[in-house]
Image (cartoon, rainbow, N blue to C red; front, top):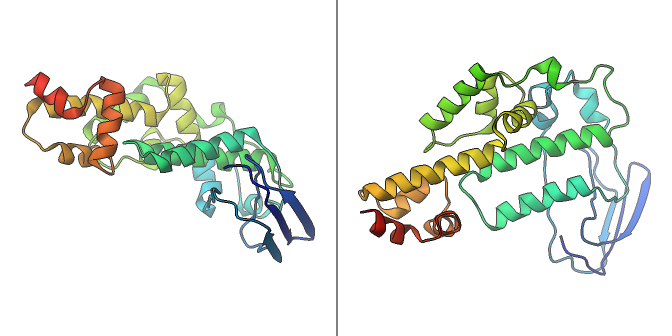
Length: 245
């Protein structure tokens, strides 16, 4: 995540990789292949390690006609730069450092995009038949209404991308893209805005402690909720409550 003078040496899969670490450098280790050697010459104070389970590379997740051979064909790579993968990683790191109410939806969406990018660019061979948005359907008005109704009914619940994609009868990857096309914003931003609307309504009623509202709407703490609320509303939750009552 930050540049350093560290030299990273690693071997695996018959590859010797020796790299001076700098911001945006990516090292990939496929499942089932452990480095024969991993040497880091100096301290690297800020590194993000992302683990993607097998399920992220399934047809249910990516919507393609994929099989286990696709995951197995991910290669041990020399260190490389990929601006899209790097931006996904920075967004994940930002959420970890400053949690938001829709952070889980954001991370799930980003992880699906990350898996799709790896399949697109870093496999030794692709399936003969690739998926497409047209093949797996778009988010028509009827299915979109079902999803929006579900979000509204469960705005204080633990919404997940898998649940929303299942309601829309799409893979999680195709759902995230179709939702953004239909609504003009990704699922996590829509849910975040809806939760802020609910927060204002709950604060105006005045019968629940602010910490309870924060936790009910998916924030890990009252402090995180207060920071997010002030960015949106221009005032702290307590001040908003006093003004509304």
